[in-house]
Length: 347
Image 1 (spheres, rainbow, N blue to C red):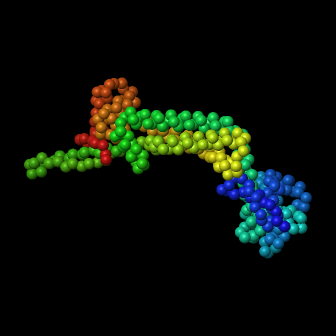
Image 2: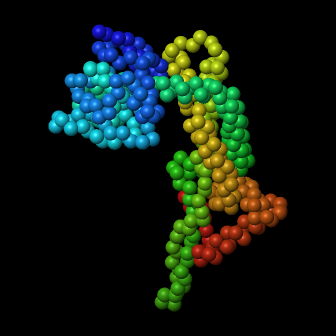
Image 3: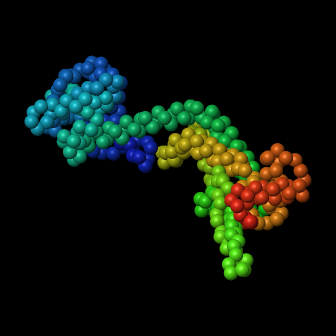
């Protein structure tokens, strides 16, 4: 006899009807939260052997705090007896009921067995029920999620504008260098020092020049200079907001469209987390030392702007000319530290 079975597909998140030679019926499957619920079933017998020949159908699944022994019968005639917290409840052909561990059907009967096939169908149905419950909970809390999404959309836009305003305020050459560093993943700020050794040879003054590289520090949050990340993130959040509104609106929505909207809802927490991480990345970028930035551009105007910002960060007030003098002092300190006659921006 054939029955209509409600199967769940991972690509389509709602039940669809198919025909199959099995007595497994989705609407009858039950989830058991305690062993007492199983023991109270008419026909349940403890240590009741299950074989491929006497198996009839899966009744549901169990997830218990305590472990229960699997009742699959080995070829030797003994029971599997492996303890499991979760597994399956099955009816046998004589009408009695037993239990088997979560993965014992495949291990004992093989992937082509009826028992394993029915368990696969039951697992899909179980996942589908859990997903529909999860979606219903999300929809019920839709107003709260929509408010959170809107808050993060505002924060993401503000974060990028902060990064963009800073870069535009310094200049295009500096921006190009920063964007190149972000693409290559090279965050270190390095200068080259010219070390000169003077000596006498045959009455003549000689000198030997050696170039060394000196790392001043490392920049954080460079990925935040990529505008596309913010645009994509905001678009994802807007789509999820729309999905909440459509599913809450009570309009007639087709199965495929409902599946698509539900998938978006499930991405909500993940997108919110990624949005938070992106704003934190932007904050880290804006918190970098302006003194490090001074060694990334050879443009005098850009360097003067950055030097003034660095001087301000150091707690020193002053105009543009004073900033140039302050920055020259910082260069002198670096030269003295590495014993170089002059330093320059590393390529």
